[in-house]
Image (cartoon, rainbow over all chains, first blue to last red; front, side, top):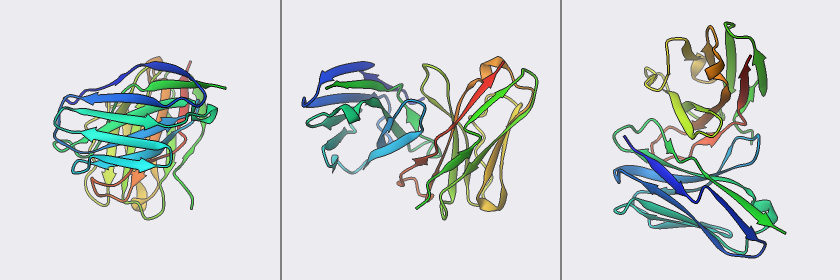
Length: 113
Length: 114
């Protein structure tokens, strides 16, 4: 069974810092990997979707990379802002059970003004 | 355009009662997913609908859980004889239907079983 791990579980940084969130997965046979953010009491907001054939995706201050062979993805946030404070989740979609994503437990990010 | 909507946003019920949770997917999305997020846990897959195909029910934790999708659009998740361990946030997501497509999530229903 696919297992997804996110490190660290929590991260606190001062405003303006660049930061990296990590996601690792045990089975490299995936269709894609998706990064989400979740604000307290809210649903998930999609940030970036990386297909298995891609190495990275960028949206604004966010850049996500994928190294499928090593089972790793990183989410890079440039020039962090207090509004970036949220829980960040990564999820992979295995090819053998393509009907669902497997989620990590998330990294809780706090950006201090 | 309108996103995925879910109702109610909060539901408090007594142990042993039945509950129904509703999900309205994005118009035109053929795939619909239900997940459960328990306190301190990751998201747990429950069930998947794709068009008119038979649903993938492999994630349902017990036979007290069931779901249907009427007319290929709105879905209802029903939990019978609720237990305290059913307390969680139930999230619905939809997508265009290809495995390469993005999943879009609703705001969730927070279920509390007393």
